[in-house]
Structures are given as C-alpha cells and as structure tokens.
Length: 194
Length: 194
DNA sequence: GTCTATATCAAGATAGAC
DNA sequence: GTCTATCTTGATATAGAC
Picture 1 (cartoon, chains in turn blue, green, brown, cyan):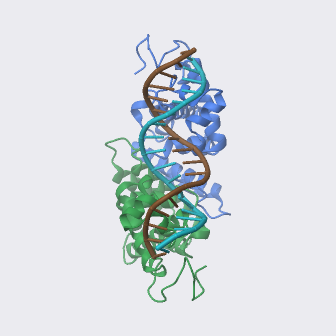
Picture 2 (cartoon, rainbow over the protein chains, first blue to last red):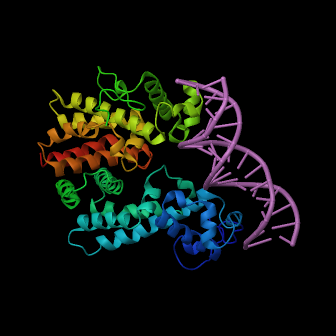
Picture 3 (cartoon, rainbow over the protein chains, first blue to last red):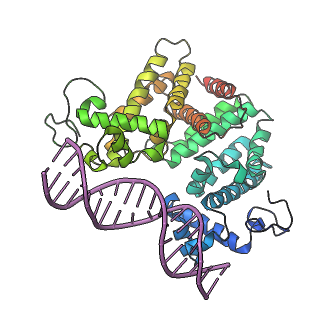
C-alpha cells in the first residue's frame, strides 16, 4: 500500500520527507496530530470522532474525508509511535557502554511519557495490514542488536520490559514498590546469557 | 466489608464454605457465574448488563437488585480469578522439584484457558477496595516462596511472566515464534540469582 | 424480586446539499 | 471539503408498578 505515486483518496504521498506523517495530506496530518494530543491528554475514551473533530475545528463527518475510519486513525497513531520508538531506541543504544540498560531506560521512558499511546500500541492485537510498512520491525531492531541476534533472548527481554512497563502504568505494583531496583534485578538476570 | 454476620442488601454471607462465590446470595452467584461464561465465550464487549440478564433469564434492571453495579460485578469476577490463581499456583509449587517452571506453567495456563478473565484482572488499575479481602495477596504468595522472599526478584519474574502471557494473548509475537523456548530462556536467566 | 418504561448519554458512520 | 441531518446501535442506571 501507498507505493503508487499518484494515490487517490486516503493515502496521497508527499514525495519528500520521511515518516508516516509526511505521507499524509496536510489536513490528515493535522487530524492525526490532534488525535495524539487528545489521546494523551484525556485518555482512550476521549478519542472519539466527535471530540477529535472539535479539536480540529470541523464536524465529525468531515474527518472521514481524510481518514477512512477510526481504525485507520488508530493505525496511523500506532505507526507514528513505532517510528518514534525506532528512533529513540537506536539513539539510546548507539555509543552507550551499557546498551541493555540504555535501551530499557528508553523503553520505559517512552511508555511513561505517553502511556495512552503505549497502551494503544500494545494492548490489542495489531492490525498490521493497516500499519505503515516496516515500522514495527524497525522498533525491534535495536534490541536484537543488543542480544547479538538471539531472538529468543530478545523476546524474553521484551516480555520483561513490557511487563514492567504495563504493570507500572496500570498501578499493579504495591504503592511504595522500588521499581528501579526491580528493573535492575531483571536486567542483571538477562545479562547473564549476554 | 462483609465481615458483619447479618449483612443486608449486597453482601449477604452464607456462613459456611469458603471463597468469594460462597459469600454471595444464590442468585448473585448465578449471575456472577453466568457473567464469567459470557465474558469468556464472547469477550469483554459482550459483558453488558443486558446480555448478561438474557443469559440469566431476567431483565437487566433486575441485576441491580443483586449486584450494586457493573464495577461490583467485575470486582467479583476478578476476586474469583485471584482465588483460583492462588489455588492453582500453590498446587503447582507444592511438591515440584522445579517450582519456578511449575509456577510459570500454571501462570501461563491460567491465562490461556481464560484469556478474557486474565485481561480483566490485569489490564486496568485494580479497584482493590471492591475486591474480596486478601485474594490478590494470596495469589502472589507462591512466587514469593519461590524467590525465597525476595520481593524485587519476584516482581521482575512476575513482569516477565505477565509480559510473555499478555503479548501471547495479544498475538504480538511473530506468527511462528517458539514461545516455549522464550519462556525457558527467560526462566533460565532468572534462575541465576536463585 | 422482577417487570416495563424511560432517562441519559455516547458511539461510528453515511446521505446528500452546498 | 465541509456541512446538517440522520441512522443505527449500544451502554449504565433508575423510577415506580406489581
């Protein structure tokens, strides 16, 4: 999808610039950015077509002129999220003398800064067919580098990181729990095989 | 709550028997059990007061005679879930020569057998004030035993297990991924500190 | 204890005029 | 491209009769 140069309707490319947003029409880009702010400010229930339209300054029905439906909107948000993760994770790993810790910190940071986006990205089965191509994989590469290409280890570490993050976001640890130490404990365990 | 012998309204105890269900009136118990089946069969969106009432054979408004509101219903489901986990986990650990693996297998098993209940139990902040007393803690005890009382290690292992489980339920690993091996890899790492 | 009737609210999406 | 108007669906919850 979105590879033909003269798209019509819902995925007009803009030729230059990289990233998911740059491949949207300006108006669609505005809508997606507003959606992101709305989601993060007021939570997932607030992300309705009506409220989103309010923020953009149009009627809900007009959004459908720019984005096929709500699923497409969410897929755009998720694609942007993966794109940012890929950037953040690559930068964290590059030139660190403790790449695993750096990556873990970047991962936790991303989730804490944008908890609702993180939940949107991880809390349901992915509609991969609606995502921008390659973004999911790009976000996963830095960890695979850290494990030296060991996929099983990468999956285990990812599961640990996701578990720590989502349980923290959902306030599932005891109120006073020292999560920094729990993180260090887990990472130390995984450093064994490394 | 529910400690006074002569409850009125929504938490009439039945004196003997243990467990959350036994402390509900028979009709409330029916409703909660029906809710559990409905949730597991058709997913969280199907768990509406109307559909639940259909299954029980009454009108939605009548449910409120037995359960205060939907939050109370969900809290009852979650309490039952914790109670079952506590049982399953204690049995898994007892008399196993590899308690960590046994516990992990039981944890994964619980989630795969009742994915919607598992999600309900873990996917949002807990209304602990609505839960049956002690059930959350009871479910956590076996793991704490396995780590010899090390809370930080227990938290890290729990995060790993929850991450593995929820990512599996959400189909977030690549289609052909060998999750058994990823589990073993993670557990082996955590066995280092043990 | 269960019912009917209703209040209240909100969602996603489309038709057709301008 | 945006609008108004509307369709369709569904939710939680309460009042008051029986």
